[in-house]
Amino acid sequence: MEKMNKRAEELGMRDTHFVNTNGLPVADHYTSAYDIGVMSQKLLKHEHTQKWFNTWQTTIQVGLPGKEKEFGLTNTNKLIKQYPGANGIKTGFTQEAGFCLSASATKDDTTLIAVVLGAKTSKIRFEEVSKLLNYGFANYASVTLADKGQRMKKVTLDKGEPYSFQALTTEKITAFVKKGEEKQAACKVTINKNIKLPLRKGDKVGTLTVYIGKEKAGTYDLVSDRDVKKVSFLTYYIRKIKNLF
Image (cartoon, rainbow, N blue to C red; front, side, top):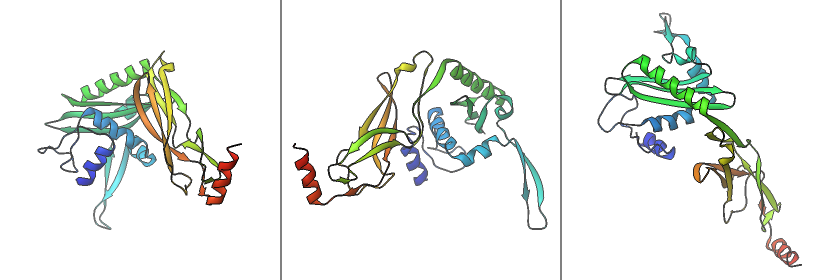
């Protein structure tokens, strides 16, 4: 449980505390719709989960060798078959929590996640999630601010060899904004101070912060595009002299 709670904290799940791994009701075991959305977003980034989420029906073999029996399994997330572009994620139910659903869908380059907790019936949870997804696709759009591996800033190091490197994004950077307000999305590049040498390709060297208006919408790592060695004192001294003229 310690690892689960630590990971939840790392992901920014502020209203979650795990006491067991099965999700069954117990004292001090809780979460929120927002936190389920955060966890769902992380799950979608793992490619192997897509197969699980999008499988509608499958079979499994259960039993001792030579005595196996085949059992059929059907996905409890009906939106996979009913909602255009649906690609996840998970249903849930207990008497205390009611009917719950975290669902995702993709249209064009936009993927949305909608979470409903505490619905009175299974039908209601699917209806409410569909309404949320419809509203999101109708009123919001994704704006691409940077592609994966895009050069965001050239950084020079007086003691580095080579003398400079490029700070790259590690993933595609997008902002989700209200339609008609796409120009409100912007990003700010911050390079770490006192970068230590030697530097390896892929090492974190800064961050890219996304803003929608004045509100911070997310922060992403920037990494070095190459190895950078530390030069000798003589080379560093010569460089400093040249910079004076």
